[in-house]
Image (tube, rainbow, N blue to C red; front, side):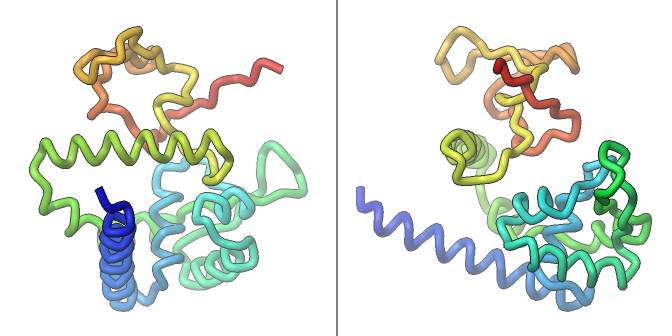
Length: 192
């Protein structure tokens, strides 16, 4: 296999998705970064601190700050005191921001819609494992993966069809069920 061709193909898909984000965002008066911020905040009941938002967006804190300022002025997010630290603030989606989300499909949605169910499951597994490895090596901000959640119980088997288990939902999980962004995620406590 020619990895250069895979790299080229992935870059073309990313470019197309970003173009879609620009088109959709333009009609809503948002940049792709602002749209990404809204999507990230969608299932964060307590919001995110600016530094965490920047890390999740993979942008500099100054870029995240600019995006948040624009979203605040549009009434789509709010700055609220952080209950955990008096001097800190959290960025929280406003009701108007939540309403806006219905108008902001992700640029990858049209690409993924072209895949068969089996291909989508295969790609989901590849993306999940890749993000997990990037997270493990510190190259991506921590994501809310099932595999890093305190409620996750891994199967003893490496068989793709074997079932893991979620203690919170009290239900089995096959690989296609594993979440990359789980709103109920609770990080495994570090053993230091």
